Length: 218
Image 1 (tube, rainbow, N blue to C red):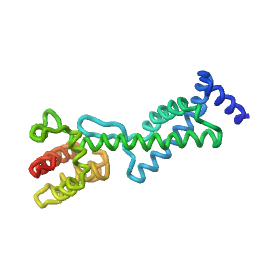
Image 2: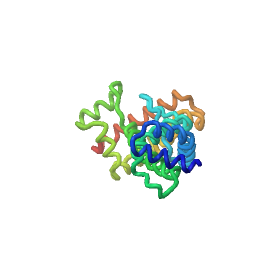
Image 3: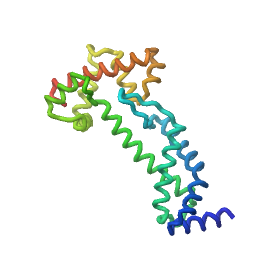
Image 4: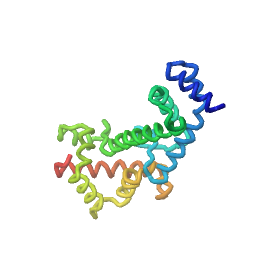
């Protein structure tokens, strides 16, 4: 009976019947959220999940459960908008899962790019960063593009592991940008207060940007 009901709802939804669309969304909301939650947990275990909670200070607070509902909402909207493309060759749930996976891959790529921008994000209160931007005649966007350059990456690693680079700052930067841990987790790992972790990242990045600018790499 459910299969028959689904077939009727899908056919009506393809014709733009809003009641049918609402019924499908209501029926598969929990399934979609649970599926997304599984995908995010898997990504988290693999170290590739990025939350969407960005703060001006660079804080990233992971909340997979809440995130899964937000993503499920977007996935269901996308699915209903493309319902005409569902040909019935697979289960409707399989079709939803594929849409969810593709949406999440795109979303994670966007979040990663946004996170990369934080690496060279400058603030009006950051005098060093403003000087670099002014001298380079560039924006933080171009900093990201340059950072993706192999030569710049090698220079970043070299600077981070120079003997005169503060090891606590290096550790905080690597935890935050390479292992993509939030500052609360870094605080728990290192035993330093969150405020101290923020300062280490901030001061370390200022030092790193300054050295890169001296080498004409940004």
